[in-house]
Image (cartoon, rainbow, N blue to C red; front, side, top):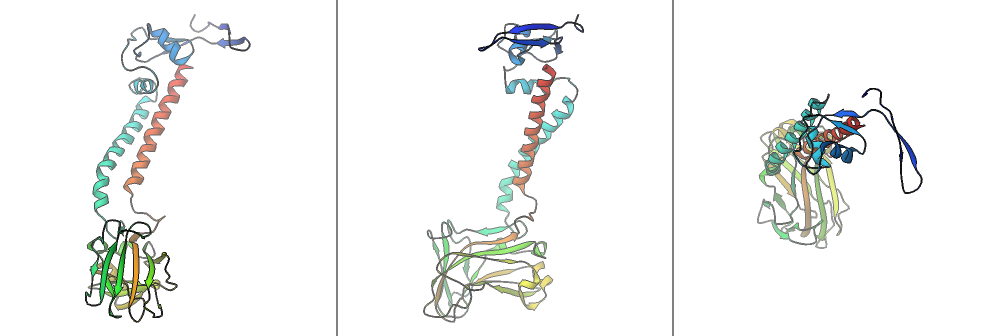
Length: 308
């Protein structure tokens, strides 16, 4: 009778009776969930249609909703093996990325991105020539948060030395794959003409090169960005490729006039350009999460299809 039974029933609703036609109920393989007085009652309650259970169905596991999806993970329906593998890969990838992320955050470098926001201090920046420059940390009025204030006391070599996270191999950033970005503002020009907004110099065994940020340099924050491409920099000594291969010193050129001047600098970044990323741990974690969600949704849909 299973292959020939046709049920026609009048189903009452809040408005008018409707005619429901159902074919023969399907045999559903699952592990029954706690809370129903009988397996058929559970199936009818869960799927809202006649479903026959296997004779060996026993009450076990959690009831309803996500528990039903989890139960189907252990079923023997076609395709379950593939879906189980998809969910497993997604779950494991998320776990690996969450464990790896703290280490990645600590390993700032030009290749992965090095950034100083000055929100809690000077972040390792120091005076290159202490007789010519004083640097101070300001906790407010940055862009946003704190910032580094530089005072050119001599009108000569006002330079701030970058911490070690900015040093090393820059060659992976060549051909405009990387950038140097600095936020700057003028605090006091000392009555002198502002000639530039500051700049960056990098040096190493292979030579020395620099880039100056152009005016205007005003009392409001402005972001200056330069691509790491040979055409955008001045090679003063050695070769372009030789410098990038091993940067052993990076200086912020904070001398913006021919005399006394005070400037603010914030959010100094060296690293890959947005849109040309290196491997992103959070990106991988997001992909893994999407795989997990996709697998769970697929399980849910297959579960409903089996019950229809």
